[in-house]
View 1 (cartoon, rainbow, N blue to C red):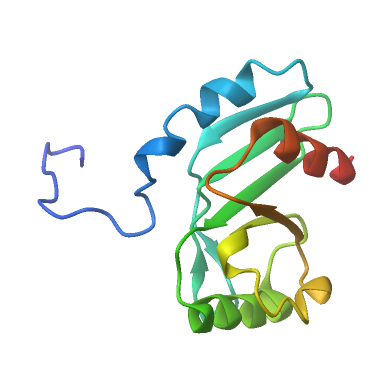
View 2 (cartoon, helix red, strand yellow; view 1 turned 120 degrees about the vertical axis):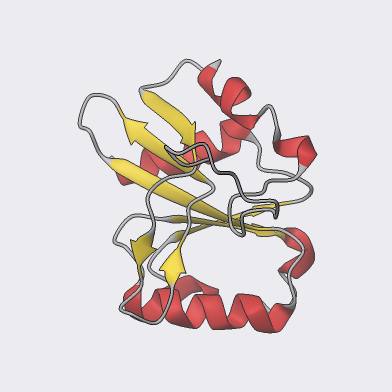
Length: 137
């Protein structure tokens, strides 16, 4: 919704999250950690070849380090391959790329992506995401 009160009649691409992820922020916030989390975040330019629209942004409270997380759920493998290629070239220094394990066939080449890769089955698990985050501090 804009300041003028206008609201789109269509779903905003990149901002929709599956219903089953609805409690992720609350469940993550319940963990005893130095990290906070919020839905979404600012667009991150990928060198003029695209943008990253984070599903979640984590902040390490003691240092102020922010780590966006982009979640790939049920996508075509070609879309994931294209995204991985773009992130290799233009991705941010700190990023968690969460991939559905259903997309994890043919994982070759994932290791050199400038992001921490987190594989999940049906939805991201807060405790496991926290473990990945701890590698950034």
